[in-house]
Amino acid sequence: MKNALFAAPFLVGTWFGIGQPDDRGSMWLIHMAADGNFQVLFRTCIKGKNLDEVETGRWRLSGDVESLHIQTIDGTPAALDDDYKILFHDGGKQTYQFLRTGFVYSSRRVDDKFEMPSCETIS
Image 1 (cartoon, rainbow, N blue to C red):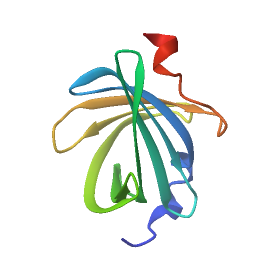
Image 2 (image 1 turned 45 degrees about the horizontal axis):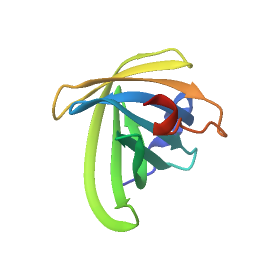
Image 3 (image 1 turned 135 degrees about the vertical axis):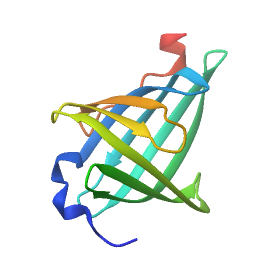
């Protein structure tokens, strides 16, 4: 994937969101680096316990479509591409639609040191 990031500095930073199509209570925390790399932590809560997954890869923006090229899942090589249409962005919040399924996500900008809540604290 080419480094097509440089037109999208507004996406750089750390973003936190809640909800997935199959689990409205799941969470994610993604760090979008200025060099086009990303790392995302997904957390699902099962009986008060954290079930975490980490994905890494490259990101880019073309028009209003943000593309994630996933290179690893929990350290295992992967080759997945996910595209999201940005529906709203104001620097502190964003709403985007996963083009493959139509599911709409929302996230908010958080400090780079932000830590996701543990499942024990929200169960």
